Length: 191
Ligand SMILES: Cc1cc2nc3c(=O)[nH]c(=O)nc-3n(C[C@H](O)[C@H](O)[C@H](O)COP(=O)(O)O)c2cc1C
Image 1 (cartoon, helix red, strand yellow):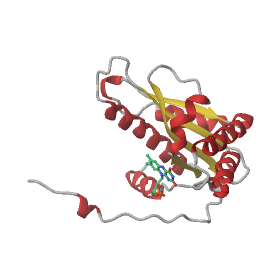
Image 2: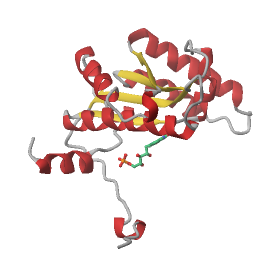
Image 3: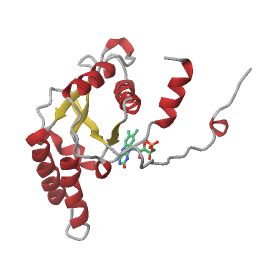
Image 4: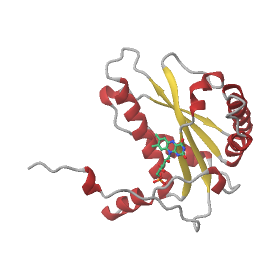
């Protein structure tokens, strides 16, 4: 890889949403590469706090039903949106796979929790950039509903969900735009 490639991959990484996914499956072989790359994220004291649940096929439909039912349960009648309820379900159906992004707290709490969340986020970035480099659509979703997914997944003690990483093939001709304020506004140089 020439050195310029990494700049392109980082800048071209976009959130690609389930509504944009085609029906073509993302292969297990590719998902295994994603997970392997996630596993090489940096990690203070090597706690390696990232945990993943790969949800595919009928399990994906069951997750959609679980999440939409939970949405109904936790939402007051005044705030209930039939559109949102339907979208929760259809997002699960449209994705080729959904990877639940989870964090296992170090049992001895040797490092602050934020460092473990940061390490998980770095693992997710490894997956996200790998998707970009291979023209696979993906994005990190963090709905309030993740607080309730212990009713769906079997968590170990100290494990919790930080979001869902949706995956799918997509039509690359539809470009998602994103923007950033200039980095100069966010940096102080001290010499
Ligand atoms: C921790 C985290 C949580 C996110 N949660 C959501 C979410 O719940 N819904 C959503 O639409 N996007 C979510 N995103 C994606 C951001 O909206 C997206 O990264 C941002 O709009 C910039 O777009 P880009 O990723 O295409 O550059 C999340 C991103 C991160 C890093």
